Image (cartoon, rainbow, N blue to C red; front, side, top):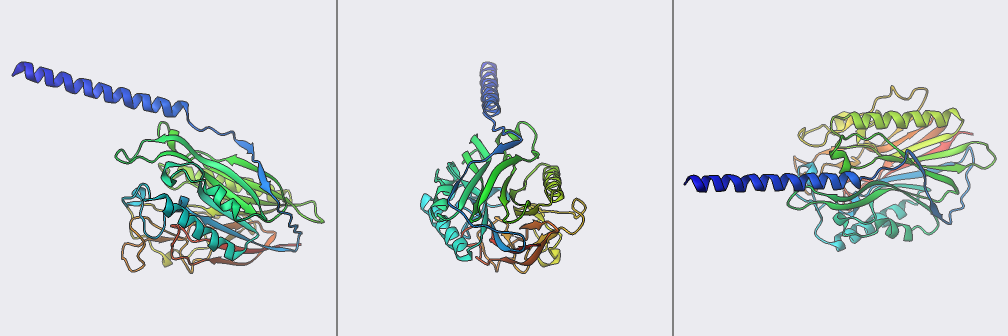
Length: 360
């Protein structure tokens, strides 16, 4: 009996040591291969867009988090309290991307900000979603900035996320002058940071006719699941500092995307927080921007839903948010902001469209 117990203990010890060694090797591999972009990187953009605008002109800008083509109305997501890690088929991904493209084309915006666009990821069957979108916007300039690049994400253990290559994408009819990727602070510490998003701003500059000023377009997607909320706060602070600097130069600034936070223009009573154990958006303060900056949302409809279960507008567990929108510099006039009601058919977000005029 003693020999058996001793043998069992030795076996268990070996198993623990092997597991620890494998875990250590995995962390070392992720650390050595961690995506570490520069603070500022020039982004190559391509396309045939030639549309010119000038002070006094109006334009429309659309933002849409497409949920990498997987988070449609029939699905939930394990990090939101649901069960799904990967949608059931590549056909489901391409069908959702097709619906997203048709929805956006119908709006015919001058500029489109997309978030969560996969290029080569296990979770979206390695479909190049950026290319699919680009093919439908032949009259536009296309720019893509990586914000999620990891060779292997090991969780959940029973059905891991695996390889991810994803980012944010701007599709513009305007005659773009330049594009760059600006890194944002990381809201995670090592070793979790090795396989987390590396948030950024995708900044495009448009030279205006008959003016020395520029239109600065900022596509963004801020942290959602950072460890203590400090990541989102630091990212938003850097965004505000950048916008203020550009406005101080005399430029027009339009920043839009998925803030993963509630903008000040939203009536919080419309969509009360029901499920406090899941994602909870922060509230953006107006303290970082003073002097007439415009917060542009449409809270007549939710812009996002919690992926705790497949979408059911009748369910008492359906949680809505308004976390997508725009911030515009004081030298603009806001003609309107509208959320497009897709009933979350293709993504867990609705697109939001801004109509804005550049003050002459």
